[in-house]
Image 1 (cartoon, rainbow, N blue to C red):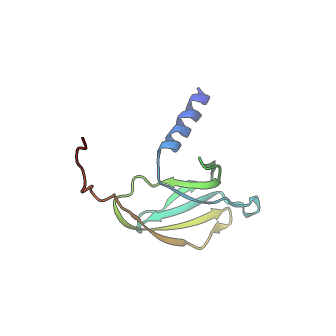
Image 2 (spheres, helix red, strand yellow):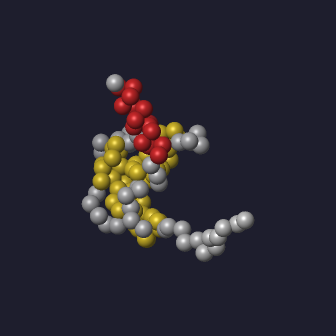
Image 3 (cartoon, one colour):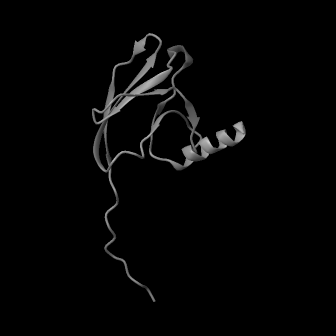
Length: 108
């Protein structure tokens, strides 16, 4: 049963995107989690978790951002450990759908 649960979690992670990720932290930093906000919304706490991505790189996965609506967004992230939180790191991104195709036709 545990194997099935792990498999389902990995399949879900492989199919969802985009992810909010960061470089891994050295053990000496004792990072146990992150706090992030999207567009000045409520703070969301997530545990520190390393993940090997499909390209072989290892990152700390913060969250699946597929829920974010189209448009411009501001995200702020802080790492934390038992002693407190880091300074916030703000960044902007745009979720944009592709333009509609204008050259659709049959070809004989």
